[in-house]
Image (cartoon, rainbow over all chains, first blue to last red; front, side, top):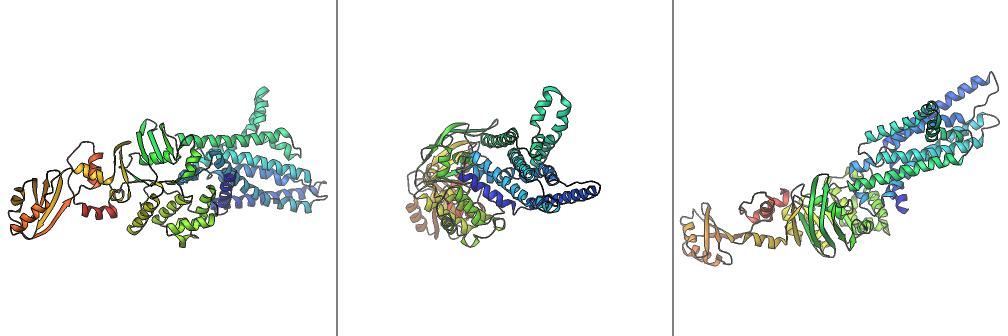
Length: 246
Length: 326
């Protein structure tokens, strides 16, 4: 476990000296700020006609979309960079278990996104002052819990993809394609019908988030994201092991 | 310390190493010599626990490299061929990271120690991306020494270093090799000659020969070769020497210089010296020519056997020292 932490710590620090991470964080915050501003403006226009107070959803909803598309850029370097630079040889000949390496890589990136998420708390905080009687704290908490779980699974998948290819560009594109599939399964699931609908809607990445979004914390949704995270980490470990045998 | 038996590794259909068997004991520096693509790096990667062999076993300090990989990795210091460094870290942070992974106590002190060993203490706070190739090589070596490993595996440790640094690293390896086991690969033959107790020549994945550098030379030379030089044009010198008993062959190299081969086990030098001087020549040089490891190497790794060409050994060392590679 100690090794996991050592690797995660290095990984986390690396984000703060990496230009890519800064660029991603910059655009992330700019876009989020813009969405927040335009949602507020719409709310003000609407409130002139009827009693309307924007909920915390105006922050969380764009966050889901942004995080989905930020993830490929955050995790693309994770393991592929080590392989490209040859430092993988260093890590794989150090007394570190393969799973410790993968989990460490995952934890580092996960903590970086959590730091980013922590900064976004400023928006609900501001909103709380603007609306009366303040925002729904329950939805805020459940919404962020859902975001954290979603990010955990996305990063795990990203780390796995990163362990498959040496090229960052390939990793980025494949991760993006997977995110898009998550995005598309939803409309597809509604048109399948029957058992297909049920399976597709269970697999649907976004639908599992909707309950959190509405303020209900359902165990099945938590299990879904946690199992997806474990699956990503497991496949990542297998992929590293396979590399040794190649 | 290192026991390798029947080690074989296939990359797809290509066999990189085939049925390697060798041992190395504590306090021994084993040189791994061979042309590019001979399988040196593959063997070292298997021994360091980076990848498993297709067939055969390798044990380090009694631990199997596949089944007890973690134990092996704890005991091995490994410097890969392409020195693995994180360019965006400082030298100190990098070494500290590696030391942390190896659960070393008093990390900071140990990092300072290894930096002192490789003479890089003044660059501790500098970024690795700003280091020269030779410095990076030394940091890679420092990394391999961090945990005072029982076995040190070095893949071309002196590549990219300047002559002064090469001498330093060689001295360092020799020092380490007194108590520990060092396996180093090189294609600089004089290096193997200088620092290794034993040399293993490998070609196309198979061990061609395994012996001490001295015995390799002696065994392959058999006959004694001499070079004789006199002042002036040396008219009649070749004939004079050719008539001495024990001399089997004389070759005139240039005016006043003759190369002589004598039958094995006979030292003809005193006789030649006396005869040459008595005949009125001014003898300026009489010296035996060793077959250099380089000649042996070429001879052993060549496909079709050809008689070795004798080269001047003492000159060879200097040439090979600086840039001599195959």
